[in-house]
Length: 352
Image (cartoon, rainbow, N blue to C red):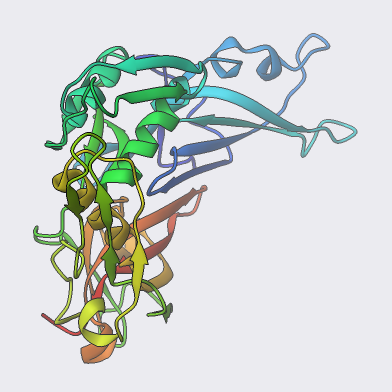
């Protein structure tokens, strides 16, 4: 029985590369999606053909595609950047592990010194992404930089620069690739208003997960203090925020169940709107106070878990059942199953 997965080299399906021993794809909010593909080694004409195969050598482009019902979905597309090889005398049980990452890998190679012109932050983000040929899916950020007061300076790789802006304004940055080979770069605040497409169930007659581990921690800020003086007019700039701007995923949000805990935001800004956005970002990041970990399979769930998506969890009582965000998924595919080790997060508890 072979792997239930298709590996593409470039734009071409590679049947031999689809017939390995193991596939691991790890996706996590705020990090590149990585992959590991393990293949058995064989000798031919005194050499190991896989170890000199350019398709899985430095810079080789691979795509991991898995079936979902009657369709397919791309788990990751990106370049090979490493290999691990295990040699065993007699060759049997020898293997090579091919390691790569998604399209953000290419964005983290060259440090750039750029003084960006006065424009909206989201326009700067779109300008960076346009140089890579990706379809841009960028939420608007109204904050506009100024050439007279505080300019926006990049002194890092494009990836680190975008990650910094995402953290500053409460956005997530990630890339996805469609089955027709279109890569989209997303730069967005967490979207919590949709309807979850997947339901994880435990403690009922039709469970699709055997065990779940939950933890919560409310010792984190739920409000900000942000006062600043304008550089030119010395006017007061107020960026205080009393609670996270995100919709709570339950009946009781962090700000409603824990004692007041504040954090001070200090930043060189020109407007209250900019300071306010940075305050919101700090509370968005701190707000994920519930974490839930578990494991399921595509067969049991009947679907894929993907980061940034909403899922419903049932069977955890009135406090902890409800809607969560998928924070990370480790896809483990072998000849018997496609397992998914996952971590979910939530910014509230109770059933809303």
